[in-house]
Length: 422
Image (tube, rainbow, N blue to C red; front, side):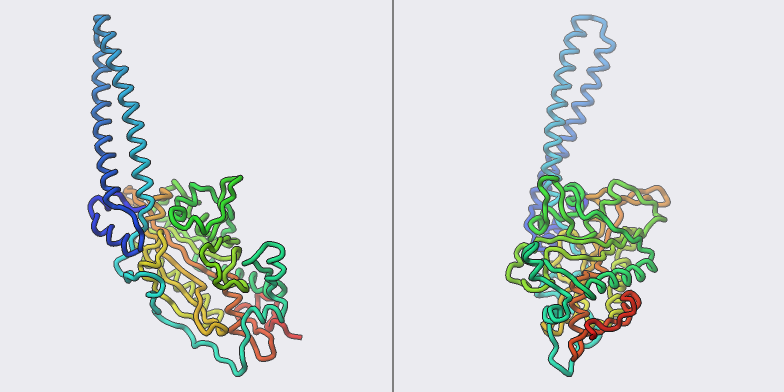
């Protein structure tokens, strides 16, 4: 969440930042609730001071009748303090509820824009793949080479699920090994995290105020299925303090992810491009505040290195303010070229969440001089496995109907260089 003091001192800047994200939240109401809370705190302090004076008076009073009257007055003071504490707790809760509705503010260099239609290309790598034959889409290739089976998955689990089979399954684990070989060089700690999370932890990451309809909730256990490893990597260090020399702390989490895809009905209903369950390797960093911008560029560079290693054409996209989620202050996407659709489709994203999540998680850093402040958090996709397999299948298909394995993955594929060779 945003520092309340910052809101108090810069209300207009906060209003503008919130508006640029198309979020409807009343900053005036927050300021009003804050003023009421501070007034209650002041009254509470006065009542406690009065109670202390009355306690001292009781302790030294010798006359029993007078002493009894002072004891009665002291009881009333305690009751008034108890009532005040209840009012103060209610005020704190009301203020906290409103503060949690305020998204992270876009950084100054983020372009203001209404929605994803205003996102813009920063750079491209490679040329869109050209073929001397009519290329097939990944669904056709998956059927012909027995790599993807959505029909049986629909029978077993319903729409928007799929089986990865044969070399497609091997490709998944080749991508995982390739990613971890690169990430461990950059001091990322490999993690296989839980795929369930409690409400407090998920709420601390900032995905429940808006976006709850995207998340699967297991009501019987009051647990949620994660939509990305980010959800569980951040809360690992909730209520902890890093020493300044311990940062950056980098994690790379491999997990199955679950999304309801609410509101996407009719979009990409065939195949595995937009599914309810997929696997992903996610990068997550805790950094010093002054280093988060550089860390963001590092995460993007790693994403590009991984894509360039696969030899896939892609573009880097700058995300405008209106397309930023609540936690993100700045975000980049990477979109891979899909020949069958004659366009680029998102495979990666990376966000700088500044101190917004860390405040909710209470993750702080202790400076060498003893000062305490909140850390910054960042996240980025290493591979969304299903979408990366789609891009490989379409861009590396050959005229004879087979698929070449990207050379960088051959060592992780048992030496296989071609998928579907007779």
